[in-house]
Length: 474
Ligand SMILES: [Zn+2]
Image (cartoon, rainbow, N blue to C red):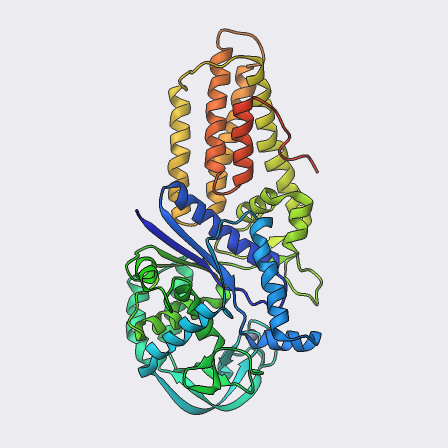
């Protein structure tokens, strides 16, 4: 059986989840569900990155122990499972034993490329990364627009520069395929500027005692990115279950990381270099999505424009949220959330479009007994083409276009209804209704990876010939 492994990035747990992470995990969920439908053995991983300095500071701010803060917030991330109807198979927390064991094992496997040196650099706690002066914008971190801190200590370094040429080839030749291509070019241009060795530890004291010990040197903690990236294999048993690790990572050709554009460098350069150093297999594909803005601006507490996915789901339902993010947000570019846009999509595509069509067809289907009638050839062809398109488009992570293809079927049915008037008694009435039911059944099945509950409800309504409102008008 073909194995398919995919992961989201691990979000920091210094705060509750916002809609931006919901976008990423919903995209991953569609891919996971789709590959399960294809009959593949899927392992879908997500979790939480808990050893960050940000957590230490957030906990200090609240006056509570760090452990309490990460437990509380990790729980909220886990609760997305129910709220967004996610199908992940494992949820790894980087404070778990299995992870700590694996992260330390990976450190030791990279030992020959790790050395100690005195260092002075500018550190952004938001990014958990050192910046060169030249990378700052007006002296500020380009990601957080915050002034990095001057850090001076003796740390461990990873010999990244050694892997420059090897990494360049791997990316150029798509041995790790980066989607979209613009992101691949971004990685190559970063490599071409010359890779410098990276700092992979910090003093335990500066880390507030929080994090994973460097093996054999408890005065240092493993840099949070080195630690967090290893989750992709520690969850597969790298630390303790070799059989699982071999099957899902080493021998598996289908390994996908889904990430946001801000952490591309970590996944496309640092992570592969660590794996090369440890002589482990590389991931196959990295899919990079854009950012979700809110009213045209980055979501931030200070702007008061953070969208809470739980609230949105409570108000409009899980599938409405899934639909909006998958349909409205271009998969590889930035997209914007506003309540106006959300309601517009909801009313036009879900309430009026899909919901209305289901109601009309089910009403018709109730009136007549349907025999097993073969669909018209053109209709069959149209449906077949939509399935083919879905396969093609999801292979390229074009969630929005795959949904557009399904909505083409919906508008086909609308037109067909208007043209054929199946509510009027005629010789053709039965066959028309039967054709409509055939397309509707396919629409429901095509929707499965995107809107699993809605898909199920439609199939149920077809089976029982019982109409129920799917998406009440707002
Ligand atoms: Zn930053």
